[in-house]
Length: 347
Image 1: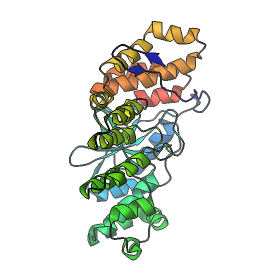
Image 2: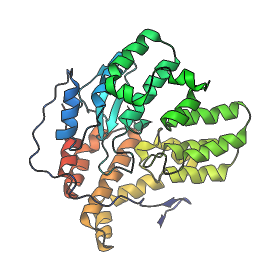
Image 3: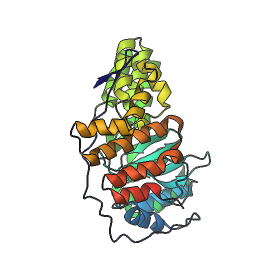
Image 4: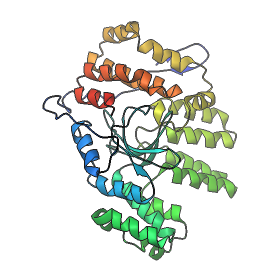
């Protein structure tokens, strides 16, 4: 912990220990991927050969379902201008890109979540591919769009049969789709946030506060800052300014590209000016790295920290391309050569 001027505390947030041996750098086949993608095998091969990890079992079924929903499946190497940890899957009519997130060191239970890529980072759609397939099927079933519904169930194939039985929502006698999703499918950020806002609409501030606090439990969305940002907004809404400030500062201990909004919006709630940004800029200088070395921090961990800090800085303005080469160098210095190649890869 380090005190900065302006009344703000800044810190070096805890990082996962460097994982030197998880991703061996030898013997990987070179992968070439066409931007005119047409086969799910491209994504499966990309995740294996470039992402250097195991692809989700039901990824081909999800890709077919996204196409049925009217999204254009795109090349996994179409990463230009996106956060470099994303594996693009599809693009919808509004231009939003659905992707998988390839963490360098994944939090427990979040090995390859489904996210929507935004300018300043990502929005979590589901913790994994199966959960997202399950949600899509439930929503289509609940919406009674028969033809499309059948197409989606057909596209989901064996994955759909395993995850959800058609008609299950109606049989549950739960009139509220969000309640069904939370009880039967899993926790989703947008659903929890809607639940809080419904409590406010009913004038039930206590339930809104309880749900906002529930949202922030670490076991629910490890590695993501969005729950803390939203909880800060909830606290502000009921006039609990000091608690909102603390919640916003807690959010800024997480990767800034997981905040679900612009960095500045959270910094304003935290009542910080430029302390955080200046501190991180200092940490990635040669002087900052030498100080860490003198404190006994392993060089590989310093490199991992620098990569994380650079991702934070890139998220402030969404300038991913400006930082990607140095981020890759950091992963190389940490011994994660496959991650470095993945970060650099572009069609």
